Length: 145
Image 1 (cartoon, rainbow, N blue to C red):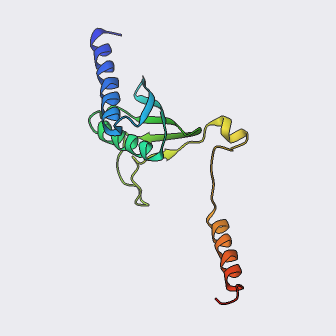
Image 2 (cartoon, rainbow, N blue to C red; image 1 turned 60 degrees about the vertical axis):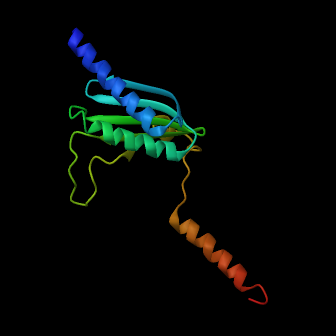
Image 3 (cartoon, helix red, strand yellow; image 1 turned 180 degrees about the vertical axis):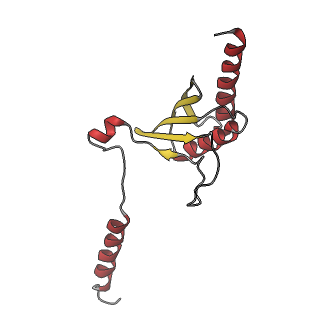
């Protein structure tokens, strides 16, 4: 790797780190930014999902300055739960369904796919609505209502 390539690589990594730290205002810890070919891998710990949203906004802002980046992978540990997001950056057009293709998508790591997924919370909408319906039935049976 030449000196110019090394400087460009460090400038890119420092820019990502600086923008993320500035936008998240100290809400993150253990921030690590690495470059792999044309992809950026970011690992971090956060205490809230709001900090993750701020991180995604920071990534969106900085990616606009570096058109050569094809993908940004964000690995966040939030309150003991693992969240992996992958954002394709090379093509930021809108798909036929109206979804912006540069939007983050959730990736479930292989170890979570094959084993127990206790760290992934799922709330199916039909299960929630059935709980609401059962509570309404109970309330309707209360005398005086």
